Length: 357
Image (cartoon, rainbow, N blue to C red; front, side, top):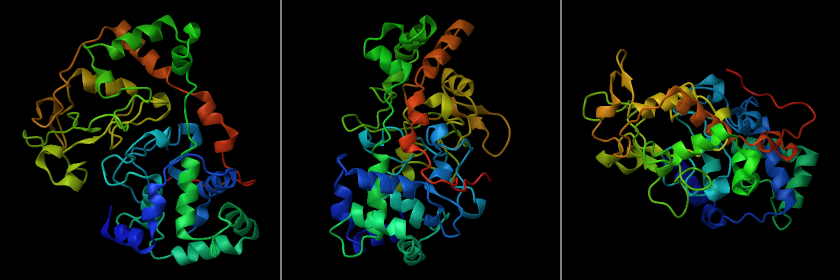
């Protein structure tokens, strides 16, 4: 989190707000958050909304290698899915300080380098835009009836967080199988599940629990170096994307990134923190090799030999049939209701402009 964001958090009195992490918000607050999520008036030039990067049909990702901010500027990292955020303890790829959704929502609004929505110096203008709209003003008043100035930055991020906490994905074939619907998974997907959970692959050692991530409140550190880079033979990674190290400055944290949930993973390509693996087949190849080898270019190196790599990533071999089974299991994590739910779709009659870059 930048120093400017920290100062704004303190100045605007967000400490009380961000400690409130319950999911029992009134419907009016959630609906307001939904509308704000799809509203390009939250960006400096009215061109982008939260949904520009977090598109429902892609399980709230964008299909790009890395996200794009104002004026199409490339952001450092791949857009993560927003599924089941209310059950995670950290939300971004590497920042352990962002532990509430209200605090996280400030980042795309206020980030300066690079700019995302780009309104760090224009929040007064954003609030004026929203307040000038009679319907939007009415919705803020209904959602926050005790506030003298309901169209506030605090209420904008509170509403966004309330909407994001409703983004639950729990009705994939995998879920139905866990609930006792034995026919929900094919024989191939069941074999893939066994492989996924086996000691041979050890996928479930990090992609654990119902959310298939260790970024939950009852798990140890959710940040891991997966041998994606090893530029100097000593574990060096690209200097503009150093992971947890950027926040802790501990050398052993170099190249560590949060374990993403695998919910709807078949819809969220490309993969890894920098979108450098295009397909699930590429991801399997990466882990089967125990790390990635790049033979040319500025990032060449043997990731499997990185001394900073998680010790559990030792590599494995799969037959073509086993690979197919594993992919079938990963496909069984797709929840059609999650991506088609009308209560999570664009609420405006005219589609919000979505940046294609």
